[in-house]
Length: 111
Length: 113
Picture 1 (cartoon, each protein chain N blue to C red):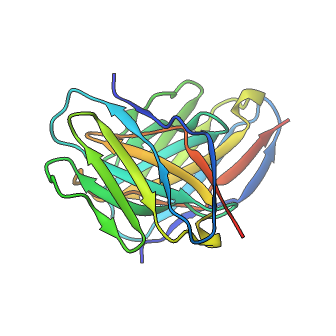
Picture 2 (picture 1 turned 135 degrees about the horizontal axis):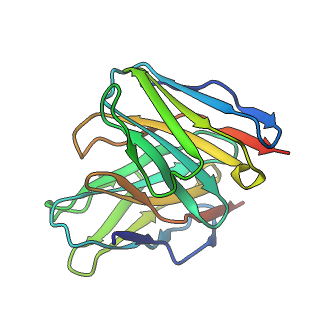
Picture 3 (picture 1 turned 90 degrees about the horizontal axis):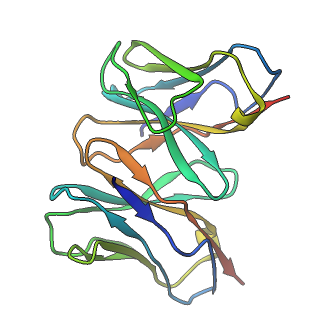
């Protein structure tokens, strides 16, 4: 069975600091896609960053970057220079034929 | 920008009622999805559709059905609502290719009394 595990239910970080959210997954597939989504309080879920499994280079999107370790099946999200607007629930997701989501990490950025 | 619109933001229904949740997307996406979101459980896939009139069961289809008569519209139906179906329901759409990210609606918070 394919699974996605986010082992940190809640995290907090001081404004301007760096935080890393962890995600591991399990699959026997070789070709797949990984995503991080952000869901701010009472707002719509939006895509943060995407990684193709066949690409060795880690994806980067402004202050957001991933550390993709295919052999370890690990896909962590690093947020640099954290801002108050980064406060949200973050979901890691994995896709082959269908999407599988983790249980989420609630991140709070402290002023 | 892709827009996924869910018909209601909040909905209160009674047990035994037949409940319809509607979702419309405006970007000609092939795939559409229905999830329920519960604290500590993340998003769980109820049903998805990869084409008009096509549907596939997700991980928790029991008690639900879906309809996709037009490409832009995907309806979730609770045949006989029960209290354990009280939840946040999210609709999403994506292009057919596997790398396409999902675009989500605002969600419907459904309470079954």
